[in-house]
Amino acid sequence: MSAVVKLSNVHKSFGTNKVLDGVSFEVGRGEVAAVIGQSGSGKSTALRCINALETIDGGTIDVCGHAVHDAKLDRRSLRRDVGIVFQSYNLFPHLTAEQNIMLAPTCVKNKSKAEARDLAHDVLRRVGLAEKADHFPEQLSGGQQQRVAIARSLAMQPKLMLFDEVTSALDPQLTGEVLKVMEDLARGGMTMILVTHEMAFARKVASQVVYMHKGKVWETGPGAMLDKPNTAELADFVGSGL
Amino acid sequence: MPSFSLVHLEFLGWAAMWTLGLSAIAFVGGGLVGFAVALMRISPFRGVRYAAIVYIQVVQGTPLLILLFLIYFGIAIVGFQEVPALIAAGIGLTIYSSGFLAEIWRGCLESVPKTQWEAAECLALTPWQRMTRVILPQAIRIATPPTVGFLVQIVKNTSLASVVGFVELAQAGKLINNSIFEPFTVFMVVAAIYFAICFPLSTWSRRLERKLNVSRR
Image (cartoon, rainbow over the protein chains, first blue to last red):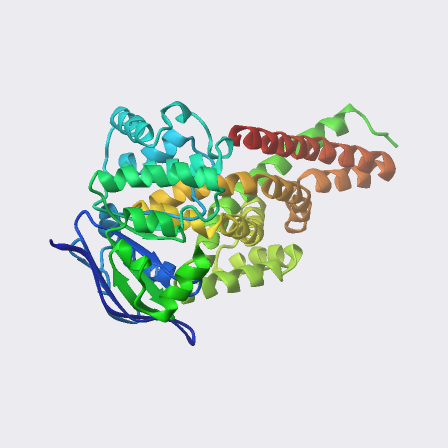
């Protein structure tokens, strides 16, 4: 299995605050990696580094053939391969669901309006929102907005998708509808890295769980690892989480 | 002694056109320069940012009256003997408006949440596309009321152009008053014309704001 994402000994500080302290892990094609850990453990920062939203202080990150740690990184070409979905959805409020999705394919991939619209309807159908194409973000529920955000990312046909606590702002019912979409994606073979607090989802869907603690990868293994933690910290974390 | 008549009103009407013309020059010129300075003000490069800050501070810290004098006599010193008053006033008001519009628009650009910039960046949009397709449409909505509000300031401040010999509304009022000496009548009419120009602007701003808010829903 070839690695789509490979972090080696990644270091990152914000001022004097060491957020990532030698983080290494690998994610292979079609794998779903769930990164878990307490708030402040560095998991969101690690995810943002993968997409070059943060620059790292040391180590290497290779993503779909891009050397992300390289100062000469072509960010736009990296981002054509990597989609990201945020906790706060970040849909463009002045555009409808359909226009939100059409923007990047028309701007970046030079697709015609008609092609992009077909594509938008296709991805909206995949997230179960075909009938909401003409709605503006604020006319949609949080769960629906997040599904549109996933669809917007999907429309760029990324090789890797990053999910940064995408259900943290949602109530349990809305969380369910978003997780279902993500599960479908995983089953469809999408390579995914998700930072999440949904332990049950991580156990069920993730092929690899990465437990981060104090800026380090503390423990990593399959979903079943959550039932039999090797370290006291993970046992603690799982115990308090459930 | 003649009293205020239709001839005077006609003269004021003609002068009001110059007020409008000068306002338009100041707004378009100040808008172009101001937008460029606003972009410089939020540039990732520190040197560029500081240059913009210095420009804004100097312009905002200089009385428009002094600015107009400096331009008017400055151009003469550089070697152009006969500077048309319109050019001097136009340049002065352009600089003045650009200093304020830059700061107003910087605030509007920055009030678009950082997450919107990030989301656009993560979709691989170019900086130009990000600005024109994502940030500006949102910033313009925020910018409309304060911009039109400032337009009202520009219209009123064109009255200072009289110091470089430009005959606009206020100067025309002064000229008429010098000949017929009916200050109250004359300046009431002048004030009414200023109001007639500025009031629709404010109303327009409010309507625009409402419309943009509705289209967002």
